[in-house]
Amino acid sequence: MLIIVHLYCLEMSMLVELWQWIQTSPAQSIPILSAGLGLVAGGVWTVLTFFHKIYSDREQRLFERYRLLSKEITVGRDGDDLPYIAYQLDAIYELRFFRKYYPRTIWMLKGLRGRWENSTNYDKSNLAEIDDTISYIAHRKNLGGSILFCIFNFFWWFKMKSTILNDK
Image (cartoon, rainbow, N blue to C red; front, side, top):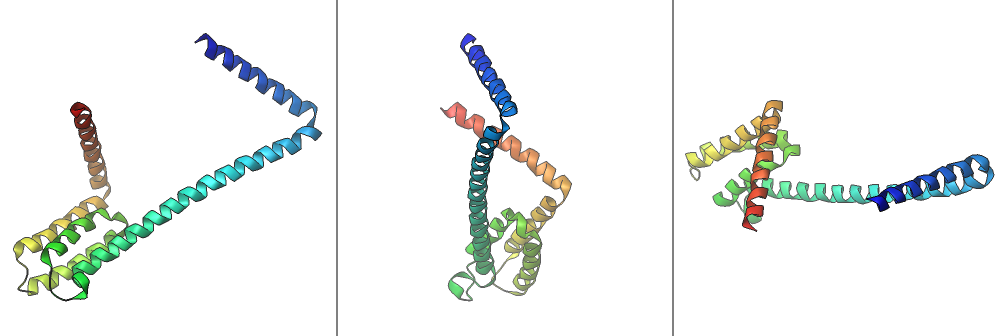
């Protein structure tokens, strides 16, 4: 503890000396401060562009996944018209997790529900999956539902972490 206090006092005295030097000789300190500020700004810019690249790549992957899901639901797998009901139901369930596309998803699912009602390939349980997904999205869209889901996710995350720690 004594070493930490001593280092802190040493750093503070160095900062005080630096500040005094800046005040007494601005002609020498301004170029050095400008160069330091330039280095800091360059480092911050590099970090910001790195995170922007990660974010934009993630958004692109999510959009590609969303497009694949909507294709599997509406066209079928590999572009044929044969219904792959299991794939379509999986895709409908997975659409719940694309918050950014909720308005488009609800529009697509409502149109799909009308087509499935008129088709002989789908039964009531398949239509129930569409209804459940629309209901889930409707609850997630409003503020109360979002808060409720956040609380639920927090407790679920805490439970999973405690389970992992107990297994070790």
